[in-house]
Structures are given as structure tokens and as C-alpha cells.
Length: 540
Image (cartoon, rainbow, N blue to C red; front, side, top):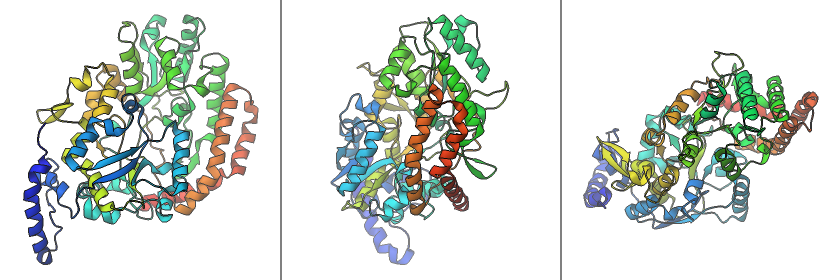
């Protein structure tokens, strides 16, 4: 393996740093700083080692273990990527992975906070933390990172300075930067989820890919008739929260959105009743899988690969790519994307899945860390040119080669010798296949989506308008406490009533009563808080 560029530069950098210190009193410049903002230049690489601190000898790091990584590893320390990072930085990481699903992980996170026994680094979605990131700083859980980044994270600082719209997202209204963020570095990385349907079954039925609700219903009815009465369609509540398939046809999302400058809550609008009416009809007609409320990955995989589920909403990778790979020995099996449906033919979908470049995922440093400056430097490596390639492509000569100056995945990734799926092979060498504290490179998705149907999916799904999305606002600590006190119970009630309306145990004639209950629980107060947060966000 090649000797690290960092190690080769270290003696020279030491001399340069000493000279810079001697000159600081005259010039006022940052020691080791570079005026060159182009990341491919050698000076940008040198910036990794020009801080006043060394990499830490060790640190503890709490993060959920992604399913693609968990398939072949018990912790991230077993990944080739982090083994290489340890070789480069000398930092030994103690990995702490909570177990279970989202709710169980959240419970373990809260128990950890209550115990006051914190690791050095916690990586998670900080927007979903009760009371918000500002409160996590004010309560002494995590550190404000602004000054630390200015002094010891030149790579991240440069990126944020050059991308003020992203900096606006990663900073709270109180001006705090609280984590090393996961940033999608290109528009094409923001769309990855939508409606998927069996093209071979459409061909057998003599149907085109559906684009309207009416066409979808006709296709699902035909599929059921052709498949011995099996319910052909699957959409879980989690799917509904990720994207806006089918509910978006009625002009609303499930949760909060902005219309004419005003924040609204989708699940209390009259159009939500129209959506529930549709889903209830499909449930009663046997078109919607009756196990949709308790569908897990294993059951979905089984039903999809055995030809019971013929249409669903899912990802380009773990949806189209995964099942096309699992069924590669079945020449008839073919999945294609469908546009987000509309009510009227020819309309542009108002809603679809589209993420912002930053959605709250990041690595924060806790107040328990005894060496935050060193940890900042260690985290900043991911935003350097070398770290960028490591986190997105892995190890040069193993998982990728440079072809015409661009990283190209090798057969270790694309045709794994151990027959690992591409997603699992990627997870052994990089984190671009899911997320983390780094900037995701579009070169990853260009190579990952190898099937024409996957590439077509991005074109289909990005057609949605999405102009009414609520920006990634950050309520104040006090506002976050109020939101948490209201939404914790309200979300439980909302989900329960959604299931009851769809499955028919609660008649839709009681929809107005449900809306009044939302109001009694405080939804209008939450809307006012988010309206104030939106107005502050617009003034950042």
C-alpha cells in the first residue's frame, strides 16, 4: 500500500509551521493557511496537518450501525476504511453501536444522556433530538464547534465559507455549529426514493407505467386478478414519511410544509381525508398488503422476491438495485420506476422525495471529550481531498483506481469476489453508500446506479415540484421543548388514527373530530413555532 502523503509531508510541514509562528506577529496570517481554494492542489492536502494540535491517540464514538455494514461487521472498526484512517492518523477508535431499530436506538440514546456517561463523539440526526441542538449545547451535552472549526478544521471551514447556503443549514438560529455534517455534494444525490412497479407484469397486462391515481388503481386491480388475489401494493408508514408518493397527488405532504409563506400541517388538511379515503378503498379492495402496518425488511424481501408484492415505494439502490440483483436468475423479473402520481394526466407532481443537502445528520463532540481540539482535527480529515476519497471511494488500489483523474470502483466493489451485494461491499470500504460526517461525492452514485432503470428513476422522481418544502429550520431550545412536549403524544395519536382510518376500524366520517383532537393537543401552537422559526431562517 502506498505511503500516506501526510506522513511524507510531516517533516516539511513541521518546518513550515515553525516559520509561520515566527512570522505571525508581522503578518497576522493563520499558520499554515493557504489562499488556494481549489481542493485538487497540493496546498489543500497540506492543510490537514497545519493545525496546532495532533490527531488524538484515541476516542470513543457512538453511532448506529448501518444495515449494509452490519451484514458483514460487528462494528465500524472492522471496516477497511476506518482501519486505513487509523493507519493515517494513528487514532484508535472505540466504537459504540446501539442495537435494535429506530425507536430502540432513540431509547438507548436517551438513557445514555440520563446516565451522564457520554462518549467523545455522538453521530446521529440532531434535528430529531428532543429540544433540538441548541438545547443540547446549553444543557452541557455537546459543544458549540464554531471556534474549534475556525482554528482546527480548515477543510470544513473552507467548504462552509465557499457554500454559504449550506452553512446556513448547518448553523442554528442562535449561530451555533454543533456537528461535523453529512452533506450531499450535488443535486443528483438529493433524490433517491419513489414509486416502483413490476414492468414485466405491466407488459403481461398490456398496460403502460401508471402516472395518475386512476391508472395506478387500474393496474393494481389487474395485478390482483392475474396473481390469484394476492394484494399487489406495499407502502408502509415509514415509506410515507420518507417520500410523498400517493399523498402528494392531493397537494400535501404528511407533515409540515409552506404555502404562500405560511406553515401548514398536511395531516389536518381536507386533502388528507381524500388520501385516507384512497388508501382505505385500496385496503378494502385487497390492493394494499394487509401487513403494511407491521412490514419489516425480511418480510418485504420475501414477498417481493416471491412475486407477491408487485408495486411499492422504495430506493434506487436497496429497492430497484437490490431486488434486481437478488432476482438476476429470473429473466422475466423487471422493476422500473414510475413518476410520482398526480390526479390529472399531464400534471406536474407537486410533491416527491427530495432531500436538502443537509438534513441534520452529523458527528457532535460531547462535553466529556478531554481533547476536543484533537477530535476536531480528526473529524476534519474527512473533508480534506484525501479524506474525501477515503469516505466516498475507499482505498486507492483496492476499492478504487484513478481513471482519467477520477476515482473508479474496482471489482472488489462492483463484482465482489465473496459475492457480496454492491451495497455491502461498499460499506466495507466507504460511507457514501449511507451517510456520515463527510461530503458525499456524485461519483459514487454515478457508479452505484449501474442499471438503466435506476438511472431512469432519478429522472422520473426529480420531476416533482417540491417548492413547498419547509426548510431545515431550527427552533430555539425553548421552542424545541414545547414542540417535543406536544408532538411526542400527537405523533402517536396521528399514526394510530392513520392506521385506523386506512384499515377501517375508525370511519372517515370522524375525520373532523380527529382534526379537532389535533388542535386540542396543540398542533396549532407547533405551527406558530415553526412559522417563527421559518421567518428567522429566512433572515439568517
